[in-house]
Image (tube, rainbow, N blue to C red; front, side):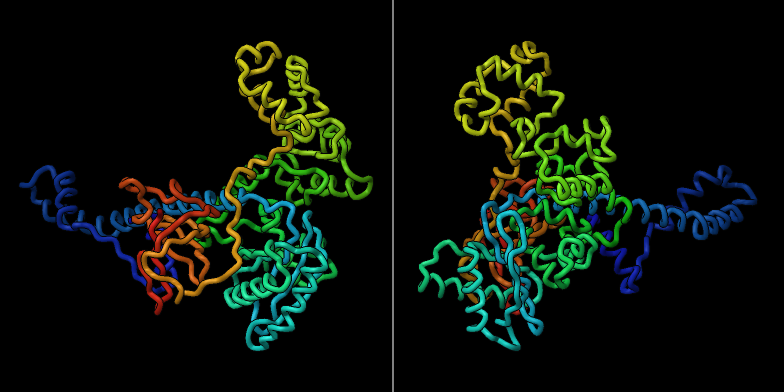
Length: 507
């Protein structure tokens, strides 16, 4: 049995839908035990011993073995499900940010209307309203006028639509609106994408959201979260309980303590891998930096609000709760674009500044001009003898390589090299699909038996593990082939319009 099958069976049993029974070849098992226990077949007590063995097996031994087997299978399935969730969460958090975009977020709904929020390039909330383009109101013309006004006022170039209730109707409205606007405004840059809104409602009712937007209602706060997830997925998703993000399978059935611990580790790993801007990061984001607690993160934000931006990593030592040990843990993960020392905006730890300066002196590099002399620095450092240079400046080769990488690309975000989200300007329906059609899609979730892919219609398609093979090789783990957020090319190999099912083949 596969791990996800074990968890499905356990859920069915727990909800009284299934009765689970473990069966062994009882006659053969009893014979094996008899051979061990009964050493003299000619004994007058042979029959009594056989009865005792059968009684002990049925009443004591078998129930104990059954519990042990079920517990062992469940533990193994739990660990696998936790690892799967952790892998998907890591891929989701590491999605590349859509920089330099002014984004309109739309939280779709029917009766209560679609909530609209506008955020700027830094995530600052600019404006918001409610439109009613979906049933039962269907105020399409009025909604188009409202969107036109907001787009013209704030120069919006991207619309993010939540994937909840009424998502596809809203998507159709937005696609039609973009086409119309393109005709009379010649606005070629406007596009949209569908955003996973899982956890947005959890955030909107949280203490963090209430403190950030005390004047807004919960629905509008959730909509701002949808827009910000496009701007910087990591910075926004860390505000939400990872279990609410919805990229796992049976996550509510597994050991919750182990799941929470694993997911927290993943979030912390991602945050530290990317680093945070000390002058813009929220307290929830800062709290995931190695060595920083929630209290210290709040103190950093308060200090920033009271006295202005940080201009040096050393200023962190002035924060209440930050000693030398905590500073050593956290300093390398903090970035300060406005710093007087350009090295403070890199992943180079302060304890390696001396070595970095020695390297710069060795190759006549001006530390103050890292950003403006990138090509020149890259030419000087690309093909050096790292072993020899490491000895000259007194560090190990791995440290030298980290210093070189950050001198060549100061302030580099490791997410920049990943695929950007798939942007759309038109919409398709199930009726537009046909077998053999090739499409680009976004991987939404990866599970043991395959992956679910958004190909631009209401229903995600299933890319089964058996259809992931490239070059004839068998795929054992879908995560070896695709990850959450990947943009992939697929072919439709089966369509069931009545049941809303789409089968895909990886190309």
